[in-house]
Length: 314
Image 1 (tube, helix red, strand yellow):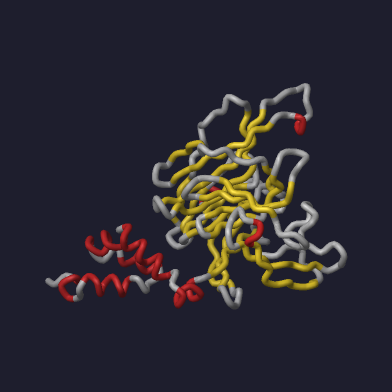
Image 2 (image 1 turned 60 degrees about the horizontal axis):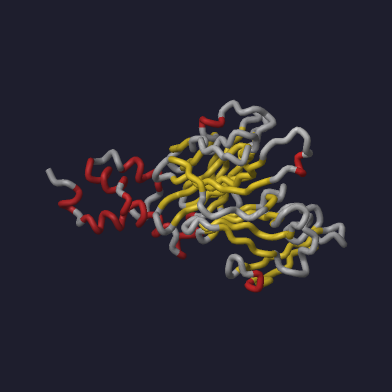
């Protein structure tokens, strides 16, 4: 009896498998032990990921992940939308860890990197789940047990990204630490800012050695991950001297960078991402930031609008 490797060279088998979707690869793991070991190997996983990120394959495999509530049951579901037509390709239930959540709770998509999606709830508790929609595998991120002598720690927001140096996925938790004082109003308390990082490879939390700058995450929850940086739309500085900007965390070097927003379109820190107050319609401005932390590297690309009835761009 001939094995596949005796009929076809392994290099050719790998080249064929690289073109297959993840769902097919999961089925083919059952063919034989050698294929299972090959498909599970980190080397093949990296090659498959790079193959799907090439220019010729990127748009073919690209899509949007939309979370919504079903009208009939009020349950959360995820829908995958085709990149060009926005047609719904498939719909599936949320990970089982979020079954039966209360109606006032909402599931947030923090970020998606290399097919992994980081989810959390908009209620206290940091119920973070890492989810692979293709395989439906999940990883519940444990709660941090780190304590702080300065006082009580309050999570402001989280980010999710990839460390290219260590080939590891990380979750960063932004913290405000304060010492409760019944004699003082909340905004009169002394706050300290810190951050913790969870590494998927170790399965544990640790504190970030570099201190986080003073900040206040904007309630609009504009956040994004690109090129090893996770960024939040934020008001940066110490109260009351805030300035509108972008707070970024370098996933590899584990340092924070702050970038002031460009002049002109965004003068009001309460009006983010180019909302024009002089019109009933809204204008949106597309800017490119060439270097994190350098205000002068902003380049304005487009002005979209004015448009009626659109409040928040996606």
